View (tube, rainbow, N blue to C red):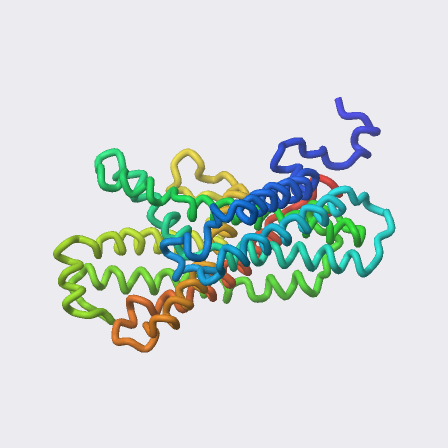
Length: 364
């Protein structure tokens, strides 16, 4: 039986590890920065192991591909260790404690800078490619020795480094949000009380952002399927014929199919079936779609599309590919940063619309 005292306690405290992210994210970000800083210090002292620059076989894809190890390694070590020290102070903060304005600005600025650098600047298109081809790999790898051999290449030091960097970027984004909210007296989990004007602006542009985020991968998919259909649209005819002959164009068609699935799922961010499983979904039909099931993958794709697109633009400018006749091979990638930003905006609007009452502060 529920007593009056129990009713006055408000919403039940959420006890799941993921639901307690405001408690552990600042410490996790601090430990990540400490571990990365010590690793980078090892690169500095030994002169070996730095995964960027000359050691990266595909460094032309990376925005930091030209950074030499003797400069990059100590810089990475210094920034990461400074982040670890700052993160420890941020994690130890308790709501209500006075904090100098200059320190708050510095801590939030450093955290935001680290987040952007780790999520957008360091990663490149290779992680997006692995994510795009992952379904095909899972389906075909058990029956194809060549694909199984390529999996090892996809798990090289460069790829593992980028995965670690992405994890750090999300941790630092979470830690910075928590600290920014706590130091102004807002709920660390939901950020309420909200600035109603900012929330209204995000919601106002939710549909345009969603349609842009859905259209760009669809455009990419159309060009790849047109190639497979036998039309060398925006592609050298000899290369097109060779791609059809050896089957390499079908890999792009597979990725195009995955992109179309992403287009449909993106539209769900502003549709009723994006909130409640439709009737044609077995077992789950009629049930509410968990918010995290939409927000988490969409956020990851938004980050990967932005960083990968920026990297491809760099390659296009360096190799003068933008003004060539093979526009369909490279052109859609020019829109990928816009795709990432639009998808991020649409995902934020979806979360704001569906977040419901907060399990910590009870605000609706």
